[in-house]
Structures are given as structure tokens and as C-alpha cells.
Image (spheres, rainbow, N blue to C red):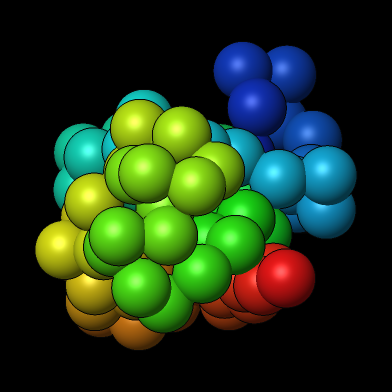
Length: 84
């Protein structure tokens, strides 16, 4: 399940330091998977939208997290999340 580069190398990679869930689209996840990405990490911080918006000030909607999880599962990318 590696991504073949133009030179024919098999490369796998992950995002252990995290990716903003609100920046991900299904198309991007597909492209990442094709290039060899096997796992991403997202910092959700809280499962409460009020805390995310009003306390942390994070521009993240929990529906975006739901979408990212669905897309990752659909395309075979492992996903991890961080919470405080």
C-alpha cells in the first residue's frame, strides 16, 4: 500500500505532528493515500463545540471531524485524535 513516486520508489509516510481537520477534504485524503500516507493525526481538543469555539477559539466544527474520520476509514488511512 505504498505510494509510487515518479522515480518508481515505494514511499510511506504519516502526519504524526498533526493536520488541521478543517483543512482536509476527501480529495486531499485520496491524494495523500495515493502518495503513500498511511496515518494522520488531528488535534480535536474537545468534543464540545462551545468549548472549541468560545474557550479555545479553534476554527473547527465537530462535523468536520466526523467527515475526516469517515473519509479516512473509507480510503484506508489510519486516524488518531488528540483531546485535552
